[in-house]
Image (tube, rainbow, N blue to C red; front, side, top):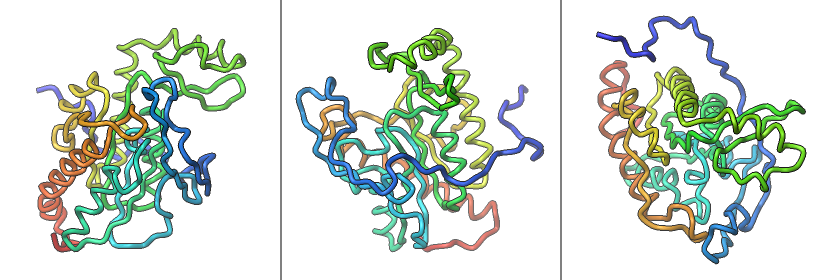
Length: 276
């Protein structure tokens, strides 16, 4: 029988655990501005976006309440067009609260990010010592590269060339020409392998908004994959997933967490940290 390509028997491969990077939004308050105005069907996003001292739309990381729920993704996890309590990460914490478990919502998602960002940020986020990790992978055509000024940039196969600044166009075009569906899936597998290695000791669960990688998640992470993030309704910007979509995903994540907790406790021989 062919071995799982992600199976690891030793710890020879170093994982670059480090501190979480700060973003350009540190301490800012923004009203609207995260939705693409050309795709919002005439709807105006007036949502309030408050960022913590590290630049994430999250509670402060100094919070020491019982359970830490870490979430990483793109705009669909960031909650464009929604108040934070209506995001699936916030609803997940509320579901815990209903069972007497106090939790803090550490959401590291940012709009228009890639799976490269998700893997890298998750590793940095482990310095926060999360108890539960929720990952929503984005479109695998979103890729990161380092430009001629040694600055990290994003490239998307679907990005119109006119939206790329003049100084970036040559570099952007070179990387875009190298991008193809096969290489995009291969790059996603690399990110998935890294996330798997980094979270194998954690309660971690996966979803996705790109149907083209659903088969890979089902094959390589059948126990932690909760399924595709369904589009049930729209947020206030008229483009992103709305409150009902988030609620459904939160309930799906929570159901899987409830199923997983007794098995993890039994396997590790630990006393439960909380009563469920």
